[in-house]
Length: 289
Ligand code: PMP
Image: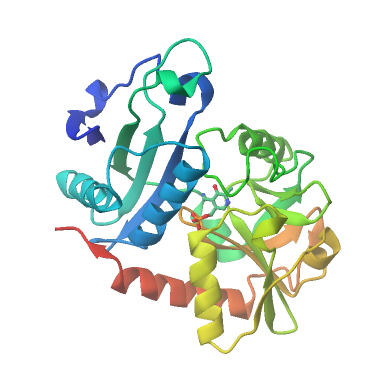
């Protein structure tokens, strides 16, 4: 594997950054997880846009233009012969001193890794997964805004540990008001009486790119989609539930906090959306050439 760091490609074993990089010392930086399917990078523009929005929110100057970044992502896929894979794009604050001050970091660093991902076991896609609600809540907008895809994912990691401790792979995170925000690395949807509902972004969800695609696919199927505050009660009593994310794609949920959701099997609208999503991933995206 060849890893891109600041304009050069390095062998995996030689791909290293400084111990003084504030990305390491303070989690000071932003990132994206992107997929390639069938020789194309899926929704690359949307991921690049979100990266620059995250960077703007933390006053981080990315040392490449969005166009240069787009070319660097495609070039990294090409260099690694990736046709189907997962791309991790990271921008750190760069090398600084042993103090918080980000102004001591003269230049951000860009890292691009193109590899593979398998988030959940295949049987969970077939039969649906069980999730729980965990005690760790989503960050407040007035703290590190959850819309920022920052390198400081400890909040989500704590929730993931709580999920794993409960014997499941993913967990619902509530916001400070007790409404469903999202999961540790995925957005959440429920189906009720033929309509699709997902928490609004102000509930503390990430602006999920898969979320956006699924909302468009559902609307194109004539399904009414609403962004509305959800409580755990709404999830327990939904007809169907599923999660979305670049890595996870669309994964059905059949049990939440011990309550069976719907029939206890992946529902019909979930299955339709999975099929439409897969079809779209095979036919659109930025060509790798
Ligand atoms: N929420 C969180 C907290 C995430 O980290 C992610 C990305 N893994 C998502 C939702 C899903 O977003 P996307 O569809 O853009 O990958």
